Image (tube, rainbow, N blue to C red):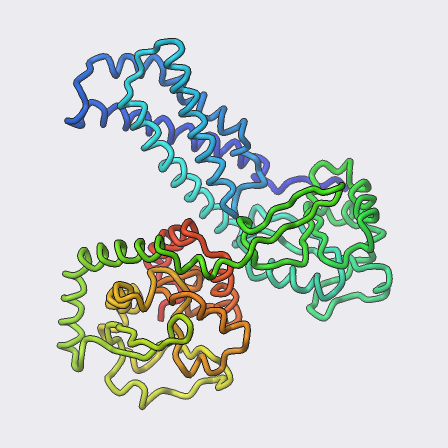
Length: 472
């Protein structure tokens, strides 16, 4: 039975290309209008005429460069930063080609128009790709555009990969079953409930029988590189079967991974964890400028909320001792969203062994508190903590001393960086996350910090707050 791509997925590159065409055309129109309207440009009556003559070439050339550099490869859609990197690189390359070409043929292309076109077009393309990604991820989470996956490896490693794919349903990977090495013959189901279809030696038969789109090799799948190469040869004529090898390395960003072939061996080099880099001067300067700007802009809203909370009864600001970087405690500021004696009337937890205490319908929350919690406005006073150097705009959630006392050794790495007003935990679901997922995301942030990741988290925070995901 031949394997095919899911309905619609094969047409996805064409749909994205059409979207890019529309956005580039809009950018061209906007650039012309701004060129004519902005007062600091010299008047030029021939801008529209010259642009109309070159518009078709500019738009088509941009899309062709995107295509040439791989921005429409189906494997880059839906996850990772590679798609956005390719869009930026291809757009800059196109700008260079247009600039050099206009100079060589002595084209009267307006320099102001040239700058505006790419200054508007590149962000517009990135926003379009982000919107398309959200649509694709939501469709995949609802069961559309998925690909049938066959896991190959030992039961333990297969179970780890299966747990990740089950948790991240937006990836669109639907596990059909798994194949185990021959020494596990006779097992019909793993301890994680994954159906065992057979043994590794029968890979090709099961790929054909179950219309598999992706074969994912985990650690322990094969005994040697020769065996893996032979299994790949068996799938050589199956053009729609993708082979993925998952090394026994998890939660490491692509920026820390370098694969360098040495004597025929694809050696994976891992960069050092970046927790120390997260304490550099650039991040501190960014925090100071960002927190100061947001505090000034939000001060009317903050003062109004403080008055509302104060009129409801009790102080407007709630101070709570939290643990910061390297275990130093500080007074974390929040708009009070609970009754004054909230700690004294805390309801019992269903699981007293859990580290993080959260209730979806906490009876202690006040009337103003429900709104400010839903929109995360209760955290605005923490901007002052950021200015004082006790917190960062982005970082792990600031824990309570009682929580830190329950930390295991690995969890203590969360304290290597400043806690943040927002972080991966917030943009990934906040209180809807399990404690294990919260720790995993925080450790990933600590080990893989980058300024680019901080900017991405801040951008995603806006959408997470507006959607009120996990806010209670």
